[in-house]
Image 1 (cartoon, rainbow, N blue to C red):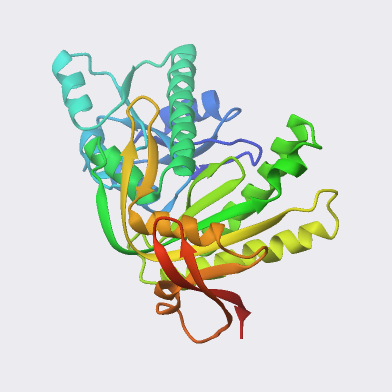
Image 2: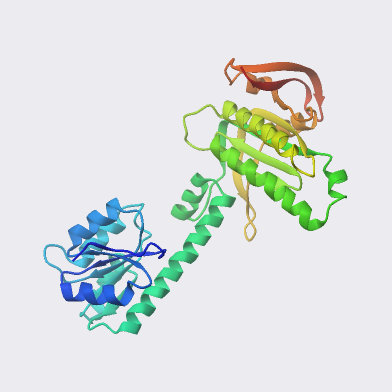
Length: 343
């Protein structure tokens, strides 16, 4: 029997594991019109397939198999951090409560008893695929709202402890003339314009290992240096800022609405934490965050403006222009520099 039965139009992949050819054929026949099917005749082969295939969404696992039973195979699969999310439904003729307990303790999600009833099999599979889809939606939403390391801590510990980051770079980007432009647009057009712009900003940020923290009306706030990536967060942030300006400049050539921005960047120690409980918000805090905000408000239109703290962290491969000493509200005098681009 072929190991793979696929229909390219189907979205979910199910691995069926059973040492009985008849059971493999029966279950494949029940499910192949709705799911991509892969099969394995023993637990060892199932583990091999799961390790090398990132598309497996659900496993139907026979319990009684030679060499390695289904419970053992399940434990091994569930022990792998990147595979533990895959639901495993046991196929069994066992009906003792102790057997079910052992199955759930090994990491199983459900049982289907033999002999198989077609509608029961389809219903159980549909239920677990639907649950998996909902989990993916939740994970995708979290990935938009929170950095990866925060999501990991929340999943592992159920809480994210505030962290002090000794060295990071913070950007504030503000759209210039927002009030005047928005007054000429319908609410629908305004939201669409902001969505288009901030979506592209998000793409640029991701390309440069920069994390968007939040948008506040027409303002975009981002940080670099939170994750354990060995790179230059200040250069990443400067590069992202230059790309923001290039994007708006290109967009303005054909767009009805001409958007311009100011960008301010500062580097130093910050604190990250989740604020709130029922409607939580991942945020960054500290004096250096406030300085970055003041730098933006004292900046120049369509320019990336930085402090000496940023300049000291980037290479000499940038064309710069001194903006001079500015009196930042509540922070005193500070020398600012415009980054014109790369040499």
